[in-house]
Amino acid sequence: MKKKGVLLVAHGSRKEEANRELFSHLERLRQYFGHFPMEAGFMELASPTIDEAVRALVEQGVKEVVVLPYFLFKGMHTTKDIPEMVRESVNRYNSSADVRLLEPVGAHPLMFDILREELHAELSPSATIKDVAPESIEQESMRIIDGYTRGWHIPDRVRPIVKRVVHTTGDFEYLKTLVFHPDAVRAGVDALRGGATIYTDVTMVKSGINKRYGHSVVCALNEEGVKELAEREGITRAAASIRSLSERLDGSIVAIGNAPTALLTLMDMVKSRMVSPALIVGTPVGFVNAREAKLVLEALDTVPYITNRGFKGGSTVAAAIVNALIKMAFEE
Image (cartoon, rainbow, N blue to C red; front, side):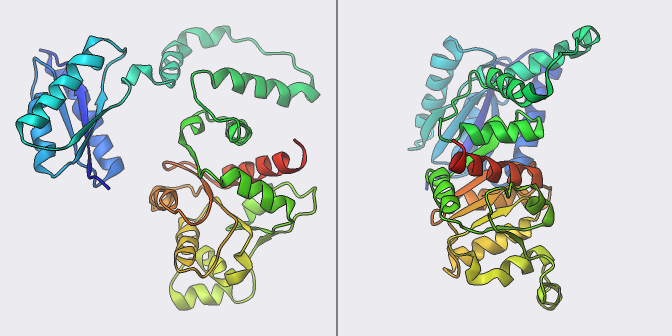
């Protein structure tokens, strides 16, 4: 795999405070993504220039320059000037690196959220309460969610799951952070129709899963021997509970919504061919190894998975995903 580097590009201003905003974003991105080389460059009026930023990436051994324009709209700068300037610089430093241009920041569907927040204080005092019949609340909620999905490309096969997670959390960020293995939906639906057991890392996930179709939902956290295994091995109880399940996980659906250690343990077992679940739902929440565990899950190519990127997640998200699959398997 080619070593990737990110080039964040802005126009540049004579006002230093305007330029500092780009560096603030750069530092936060570096902190978030860790080991990926990242540089910022300006088209004019400020330093470092695009050429200087490209040189810094080339010197770090980057073989693919991913260019993110910090611009509101598509135009000559983002479609012609910036790509040409980057490629000229790459060639100047005798690099064979590829150049890939992303959409301008302003072209992102979440730009709506920024506009909404700016207007919130001005318009919220005039808010009105909708009169909705109790039996119509969920239907109206889904109609509203459909309205928010305009501008997002959401494949039909995963749309019910995305909508269910958004409905459960009230968080539209999941429109862009949920990640699906190509075989995830088919594998999950087939496993459910075949009567597969659903295993969870914590009781909260178990409690949130729909059991009306007679599915066996198991959380081994409090099973005999789990606490002792955790103490003996110096691992979390959630990790010990997953390890204790062993071959019982074959052909099952494993839903992990709380403990990154449980997800990491499960993936180690999969990689060593100890177990082969039908589907892994991995959405642990937190700041210590939750994001990293989900990134590792994305790279797993031996078992279908559904996950989300970033620090968010949790038991309600994992349960919502499984419930959406159950509805797809037996009601749709």
